[in-house]
Amino acid sequence: MADIKLADALTSTYPGSIKRLGRWFVEAPLHDDGETWVLSKIWGTNTESVLDGSLSCTN
Image (cartoon, rainbow, N blue to C red):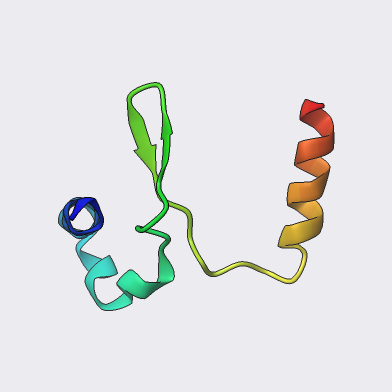
């Protein structure tokens, strides 16, 4: 049910996302300080190495 509400909020805010809703991780949102973030599923070939580098900066 929460996925449906989040998808509705996403498509209300970004109407162009209606036809491309499958490109977003609406089933696994990130919550931070009262805000909700949804990651895109459309990643480049170097995304994994960039994320690994980001993680090493936080440790």
